[in-house]
Length: 247
Length: 305
Image (cartoon, rainbow over all chains, first blue to last red; front, side):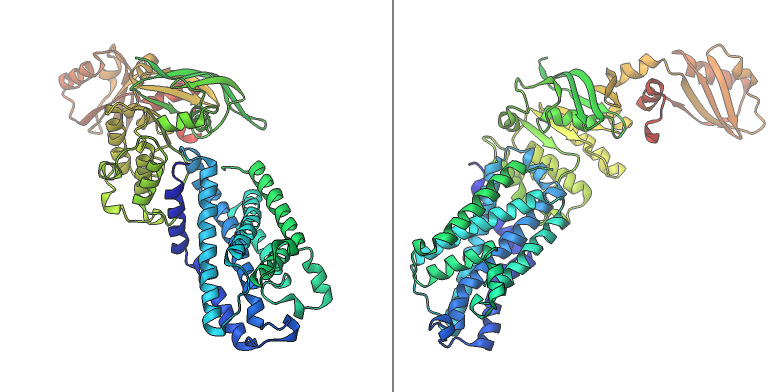
């Protein structure tokens, strides 16, 4: 795995040097808490089973960070790298493809976790949000959801004909999912029809699993979500590996 | 001299276009070997088949004893590659790129040594996107040398560079060879091939047109020599036309071009001018170049292609 440590470190630095990506991963979710927290507050509500609006939104905002990286950052980066010839330059070196992909996944995962730390700290400081789960279990859930959504992102980046197309396709998935999956707005306040649409969106299962783990559910109570995410991961990863092109 | 590269009858087709149509040659250790030809001649496809980035449809390549597209990593460990079109992440710094590429190899050159050698020391903290074309190219050379390669490949190294930067690239390529690395390059600049290469393979439409040292290629043509000078308007060229080594004389105003051949062509024309008392100035010879070789072998000017 020569070069893994070095490339992961470089990827993290590149991430920080890209202001737009950093904003949406690190700064935007705490801003959501500021905004929606000011609007809805965090008083216990019967609609959310006695929890406050911010309590139930933490897992949704986590899903937003996760899908920002998966549907925006990853496809755009891969599309750009191919179009500019970065992938060709890597291909011509002794860099192994699995090291390239591992370094990218690890760096994105670390940014995801950093984003969640900032998000949860903001929620805790401003609204004293309640966490009733097991930290390790929640982090594992985040990593698992991350792998599934990232794999989908690599597939978009691989299939898109160019950098611009990768960005557009990413957005086509990102925006509807953000609003219709319960990530930005809890599904409880949505009409039934939208809830039925939500059943077809992978991100809905991310929100479902993470919210469950956040409030202390076991993985077994969200078996459908776990299985759907396994499916998304396997199908995306296999398809991405099979269709991958250096140029 | 041992053969570091052996290419045997390689063919590569893209759709209905035959990019390389049965090419055979070898490269010896320690030489600067160049493929020269117009854009679309099949140079890049050939070099990328040797590097192992592409697999030819048929034919074989041996690079340092390996089959490059099968033994990609063994080959990558031992060669350096500069690609015609490639890039680095826009915000990566020069030093970071060198250290990272160095980390990919069992043996690597000290990044400070490379920065100094390629004149990039002052730019070590600059990001890729802030570098000029010449600086990017020098960084790519540094990346190609980072693993102390036995063979280094340069694909259109000086395209897009100004004449000054081009000349300093040539010096750099000679230094690389002088330190024991075999250099394989492609170019569409005939002058570059002529000045730089020990042996030149002229390629056109996927085929080998000629392969030899630049001097031998030029000599083989027996191309006529040219002598150019300026002279007062009323000068009469008849005395030169009648000389034995002179084929013809072109006179446009004050500018005269004398065509001829033979070892003593220049001295006899000068002698003739002196004895006729002509008031000539700015006399110089124009030797045939690889451009002329290409023109005579393919019937077309390389610039037109």
